[in-house]
Amino acid sequence: MRDFLLWSGLALLSAGVSLWVWRRLGPVSFWYVLGFPVKAVMVYGTWRAVASGCGLAKRRRRWRWSVPGFPGWGAE
Image 1 (cartoon, helix red, strand yellow):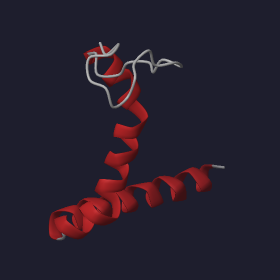
Image 2 (cartoon, helix red, strand yellow):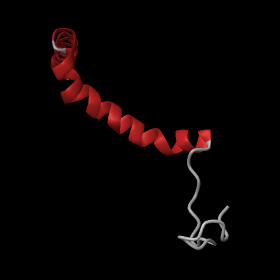
Image 3 (cartoon, one colour):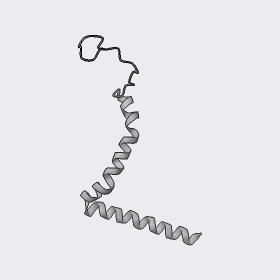
Image 4 (tube, helix red, strand yellow):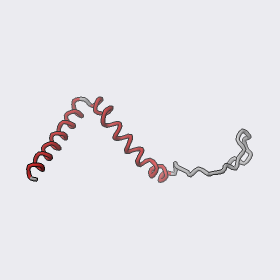
């Protein structure tokens, strides 16, 4: 068990160092391959809470009480 923890810790350390070096030496490729997808998933995951907190998200009503095409007829 001790050998497994040693090797897994070494693997995590080397992965972290290699990601850090990649970010420093190739920031554009790092952003396209890893940075942007992670950021997009984070925004997608938190968008509903952020939008409702800011008042940007409103629940859609099932029935609209306006006549489309005629401005002023039941429009809010």
